[in-house]
Image (tube, rainbow, N blue to C red; front, side, top):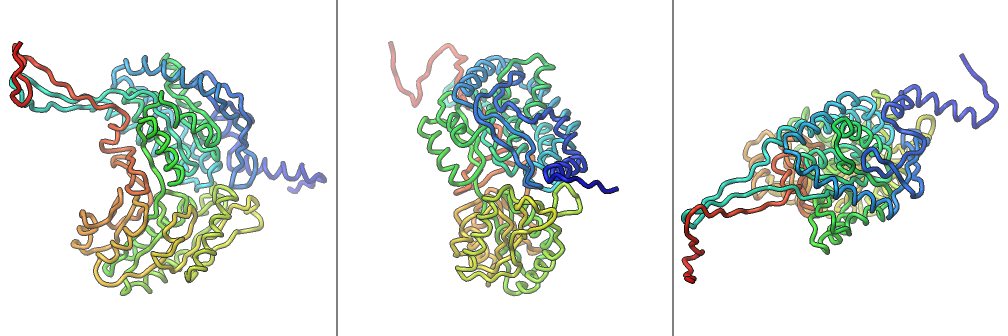
Length: 532
């Protein structure tokens, strides 16, 4: 059945309505409590904002999804005051009971996994399966945090004084400020909040202005849980806006910890501002991640690991694979296999599960991607798979680009720099694996790394103190992604922060050493005599 409409505007609206209906976006927005205009400041059930509007356009089709009101200084003061008061109540609740709230939140996320995952995909542009996967990360960290809420253990330490005992305790730190990036618009917040909440902290979240609706949706979900449990305003707060809104938190001495995810440039600013006031920073910054491919590597493992690492989320993961360091003996074989795999990549609407790669987040990112390719060419790079911007039906947003492969040298300026786009650099190494490790480590970033090998000695050397200098080092698995049970983060210009698993919870608490004298005397340290 064909419908002919004279008005161009009506045609365009019908097309948008079809897309939103076809992929269930209209229903998604309703399920998550999102409106045409949303309050971007919230302390829980109390939502308010007096700033300008942020319009959220989908990189999928270029259409307006909705708008969010930004946070003013006055709005922020209401938030920080409310959060500070809530902390005094929240810290009094036993940790396992705080864990119960997080458990309920995780269950609610299970119920809303499909709509929230679809919103992530539509607002950010990652594939639908990656959107669902991001919500699953939220669920997983909630599960992890629930168990952890019964294990916030200190330790008992032998004292050098007779009749004395020492012990270590961990106490809630207070208000935690969270600054997240567009590429993981919901998971990074959950990584921080789930742990901070069970530790007894309250949170203020400043989401990326490029994906503000995801933040409002998450706030709507947790607020319902807090309300059902008769908990006060201020345990979960959101603010919205550009970097100036973020500065309200970074310069605020009432916030002892800032967890910031983003570029190295942003991290330098945030780290310096927080350090000025002697606050604590948890920084998750850039990555320039490499996979070393040795002569014994299994191509069945290499190809999917390298390709997904390079093109997943359209190259917009901090753990995206940027460099392949390939031994000269297998270089041609690996190069041809990777190039062949790229020919099979389907680029298009990420809500269509037949497609592998969606769009970049916005036109600025597209321009950076194009400039990087030209820079690589100018430095002597050899393009194996041409990049470029896609045009025509389905690509109307102007944000769809072709993943590119370029032969390059590690010392190229553009290779040393992280480009948040699907550009993969191939380079050779000769001799032993230590030469490949030197190339792998020869960048300013130190987030994720991997080696593909069936040689035990090579794998162990890569994992040793003389091996990868990254916070994440993998064997026969790619660089991209993280598991909840391990501490996530990196070294050097990646910032040194750790989130998620292992003992990452300790950053959200303050350490206290206690000495208890259970004797009838007071022996002084080092045998000092001070008789009165």
